[in-house]
Length: 114
Image 1 (tube, rainbow, N blue to C red):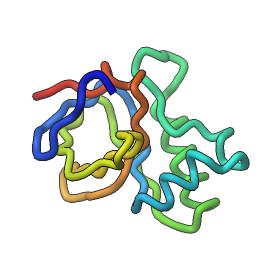
Image 2 (image 1 turned 180 degrees about the vertical axis):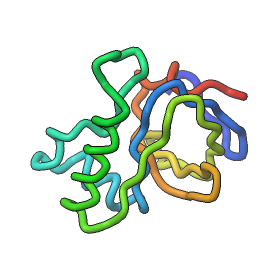
Image 3 (image 1 turned 30 degrees about the vertical axis):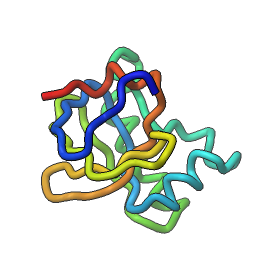
């Protein structure tokens, strides 16, 4: 990754991200061909991606995975707590929640240093 994120820094989101309860679940969602039809992020640049679609997708993921899958809204402040060795998964703190999000290099513009 060109621009590495720093543990302990605050970042502002400009897009939606799903927040998974642990790294194992986030990894399974990303690599499981059966769940790949459910988008794991949606950029704010995609005007067809409405808030209600994100809520519905989080509900479907919660039901399918048997765990609580939340989401991060645009303009949210998050703190990076940890990351996988390849920066594909970030452990973040948002408000009073801790979880993992899937982070691809093309999301770089979706997280801005505060």
